[in-house]
Image (cartoon, rainbow, N blue to C red; front, side):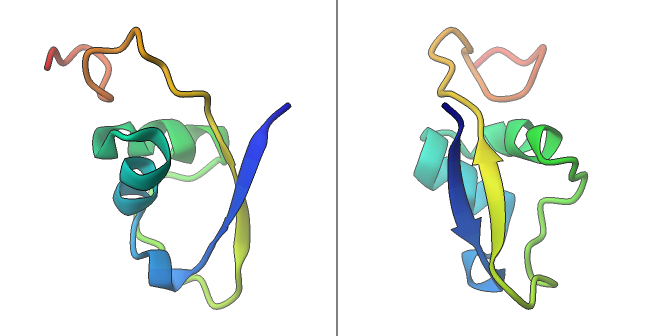
Length: 69
């Protein structure tokens, strides 16, 4: 089952969403990739948008591939 959330411009960026939902702001790209997005900025959203969230990956040292914490 895929977890989804609704976001708006008030959520500011995918960095903020990733920090709140995945406990790792650098994992914003995982949310973006799963939802076909390339820009972490949410300020242009005029209506709530549903985003799928990836599972929290405890095996990653950091949210960015190839970067060690």
